[in-house]
Amino acid sequence: DSGVTQTPKHLITATGQRVTLRCSPRSGDLSVYWYQQSLDQGLQFLIQYYNGEERAKGNILERFSAQQFPDLHSELNLSSLELGDSALYFCASSVGLNGRPDTQYFGPGTRLTVL
Amino acid sequence: GQQVMQIPQYQHVQEGEDFTTYCNSSTTLSNIQWYKQRPGGHPVFLIQLVKSGEVKKQKRLTFQFGEAKKNSSLHITATQTTDVGTYFCAVLYGGSQGNLIFGKGTKLSVKP
Figure 1 (cartoon, chains in turn brown, purple):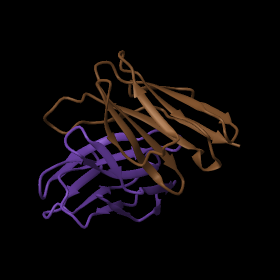
Figure 2 (figure 1 turned 45 degrees about the vertical axis):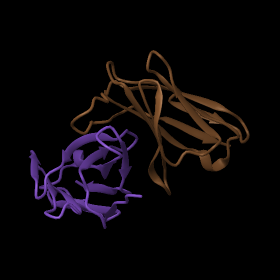
Figure 3 (figure 1 turned 180 degrees about the horizontal axis):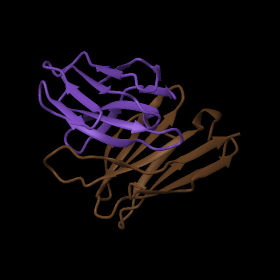
Figure 4 (figure 1 turned 120 degrees about the vertical axis):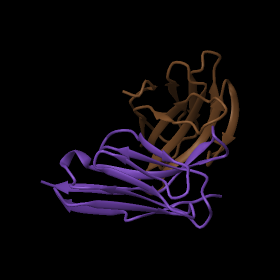
């Protein structure tokens, strides 16, 4: 158990719909990262938040957005869903202090299926 | 952007055989991390290498970072069925609190 929690575990929805994935980082971790894992693209970085502020953006579609709240939990919002959005979505967290490279701890993931 | 190529994509071994996966980059890497993902699980951090020529061991696992810091390898001696999973190399991009750029992974299966 990494200490990172994600809900829901599974999500099945239809094309065109909107969903919200939730992540609670490890206690004390300030950085939250979202990754998408699909069979053809592997693990892809989407977006990073640090202490409530967006820090870095990766291959995140405009239909996707995220935020980190004052209690440091984060939500990833996916809208106008397409079949190709079906994937595993992982949240990871790290301490986020300056200095040595951080270790990222991954949550169990949310499996999204778009029908 | 930074990319890491990982080979092989798949490896099937008999229990007791050794296994190696390789990660290569065309540019010098500041660091490299290795993760293991069990079937149905999430990536779990194994180790980080930052120094040229660095070698680290964890029981039957040996991790190396090349002298030129452009390649890395993970070697498992005498595989066991518990080693099954996908092994990813990843590079921390954008500073010490940056995001990870993952290789495509090597999926290891072990036949008992």
